[in-house]
Amino acid sequence: MRLEVEEVLPAEVARDAKELIARGEASPLLENARATARVADMLARVWREAGEDAARVFLIQQLEMVLREAARIPAQVELGDIRLVDSGDGASLTGLVNAYPDMVRHFLAQVREVLGIDVVGALTGPEGAAAKGGQP
View 1 (cartoon, one colour):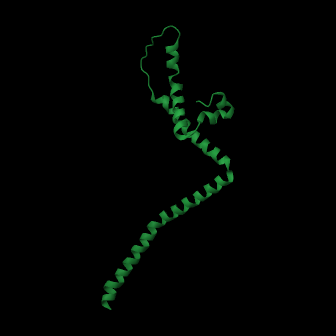
View 2 (cartoon, rainbow, N blue to C red):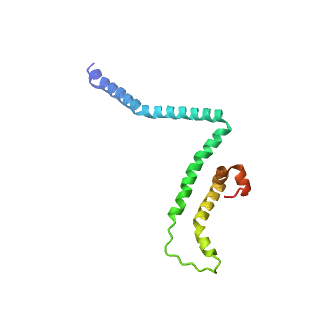
View 3 (tube, helix red, strand yellow):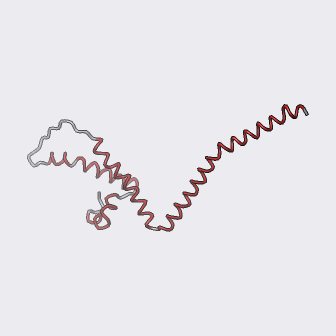
C-alpha cells in the first residue's frame, strides 16, 4: 500500500497531467486545422456557385498583384548621366524614353507566357486585345 501511495499514484497522476498538457498544447493546432478546412469548404462552395464569375474574380485578384510588381520595375532602374549620339531623327532619344514602358511590356509578356495571365487583354477586354493582336 505504501508503494502504491508513494510511487504508483504519483506516477499515474504525472502521466495524466502530461496527457492533459499535451492535449491543451495540441488544441490550437486542431482548431486551426478545423478552421482551415471550413474555409476551404466555404471557398469551394462559393466557386461552385459563382461559376465562370469565380474565375474572373480570381483573375482580378491576380491582376492586382501583377500590376503591383510591374510598377516596381522602373523604380529599380536608375540611370545616371546619359549622353546620346543621334543621327538627327530623334530615334536615340525615343528609344531611351521608351525604355521604361518597354520593360513593363516585356514583364507583362513574361507573365502571360509563364503564368497564363493576360494582363493587357484583361484590362482592354476582347475588343482591345483583338485590335492589338493580343500583344502587350
